[in-house]
Image 1 (tube, helix red, strand yellow):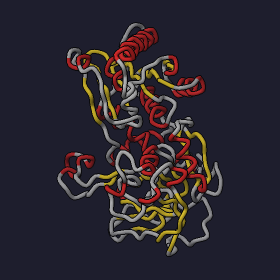
Image 2 (cartoon, rainbow, N blue to C red):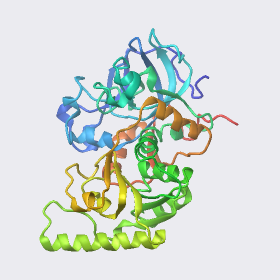
Image 3 (tube, one colour):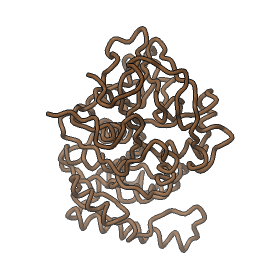
Image 4 (cartoon, rainbow, N blue to C red):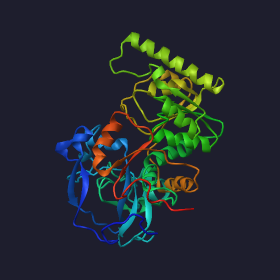
Length: 400
C-alpha cells in the first residue's frame, strides 16, 4: 500500500528535526499550558522498530495525566528529557529497522500501544501484558503520536482497515482493544448477560456497548446527557440511564448523613436497573471511572457477578462497603490494555465492519492542548482525534 496523503518528504527520508507537542518537567500542569509545540530531533528506528509518519492521532485521558503529572509524573517512569504523548495513531510506515520483516515503507497501519521486551518467558508463552518491561507507549514511554513521526516496536502495528479514514483509524485502538480484553478475555462475556457500562457515550464505553451487542449481551449505558443516550442506543445499548438523575458520587469528606443519602441513591439506581432488565441485576460492571462510581458498581453487581476495571479517571483510592462483595461472592477483576494477539483479533472485527469507530470532534494539529483540556472537563462525546499529517478530515479511505 502507499500513502494516500501527499507528503513533501520522499518515503523513507527523515528530517533531522520534526514538530511535536511536548511536555517538560517544568511545564507540568493544565494541558493547555503543559503541552507546547517544539522542534525536536526526529527519532531513528532500532533494529526491531518502525518509524511511522503520523496521519492522525487519538486523544486519551493518559495525555491529561501526563500533562498534569498525576498520579505520577511520566518523568519518573521514563528517562527522556521531554514527553511526547499520544497512544493512538494511524499512519504510514516510513522507515523500518534491520530486523523488521512483516512491514515495509508505504504500508498503512494502525498502532496499538503495548510495548514489551519480546524475549522473556512471559512474552513467549504466558502473556506479553505480564512482561516486567511492559509499558504503554505514549504514556510510560515518550515518542508518542503527537509529532510528525513516531517510533514504535514492529509488533505494535496492525493493518489499517481500508474503508476507514485516517481519523477513524486513529480513534479506536486504545479504547477498543482495552474494552475487548476487559469483556472478552477477562470477564468472558456471554450471550444474555446484563452489562452496566459507565460512560457509555465516551471512547471506552462506546466500544464496550458495541462488544456487548456483538456477543448478544445487554448493555445498560450510563451517560450524562440525552444526546449520549441516543448515541448508545444507536450503537446497540439495550437501555441508557442518565447519571445526573442520581446522586451517587462518593465524596472524600462524606458525612454520615451524606453517606446514608448516597446509599439510598444507590438503592434507587439499582431499582432503576432492574426496571430496565425485567427484574435482574447486572452480571458485569464495566468500570473505568474509579472512586466516584466504584461503591455503586460493587453494590449493583449481581451475586457472583463481576466488576472489571481498567482505570480510575476520577481517582484511584477506592472506598466501598466490602460486605456487598464477600457476602454475595462478587469478583473484582483488573484489566490492562491488551496483548498483540487480542489487538489483532479485535482489529479484524473492524476490518469486517462488525465494530465501528465512534469519532467525536476532530482537531487540527495546533489544537492538541485544547483537545486535552476538553477531555479533562468531560466536555466531549465519542473519541476526539487530531489531524497530524492528514491534510483534512475524510481522507485515507479506500473503496470496497
